[in-house]
Image (tube, rainbow over all chains, first blue to last red; front, side, top):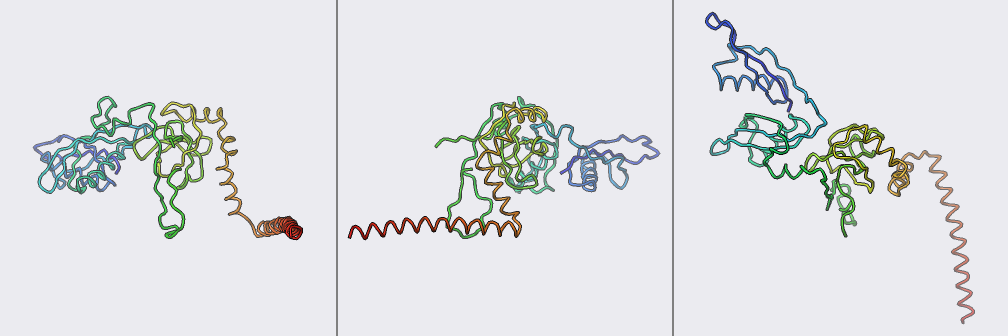
Length: 170
Length: 142
């Protein structure tokens, strides 16, 4: 996922000569999808259609501090098999687009939610004191330290048959 | 047996595979359960995130705070003389030996063969002496 800043508006008409410009923060894998998602949300939330509108800008937003570890809070809405629900999820990542990518993968894994049924409502960097999820809060420790116990073998088939037991402490 | 090598800010790790494979780096901070932020200004590793699966922890640590910047990491590395300490370890010597073996030319392999032959000849002579001594002992016993 990449983060895009998409600006769009309805084309001016004799009645509405200066239509308002709407800005959206869209997470998509490319520009084409970003513009498409802009129209999807714009149509859903305002009286604005692609056929009567124009996109003024679709710019990729790069992370301001890509080497700073941040906690991201993502408010989303998704369709499950029996209904639609709101969720608040937290992720720890270096970039906002990385966090959103994690979110989509996580939703797919935990709730079998496909990307088309997920809508990101809001995405924000959350300070450590305001984080709610214990699996994120466990990393808020300046003296964090843990071993890597029982390390699994990466190459299970090289060799596939062997007389040596796998080495798990390294 | 207790654990001695921990994932912690300041831990020096060997990157086992990937584009930065074979290089040393420092764990600067921990992102989450699977990823760390690493940096290796002296070894040519850019500051980046990496999965723990690629890291093999060494026994060395640097006295840096979590999230230390590249300049601080470089100074701490040079002060602790990690490069020389690492090269003295058996681990590093084995890696160097593997590399030398893999990069042998045909002439090197010939030299190795001749060296092995010379060593085995010396061994055989000594073994022969011991066998002879043992046979003499048996004869005198009888």
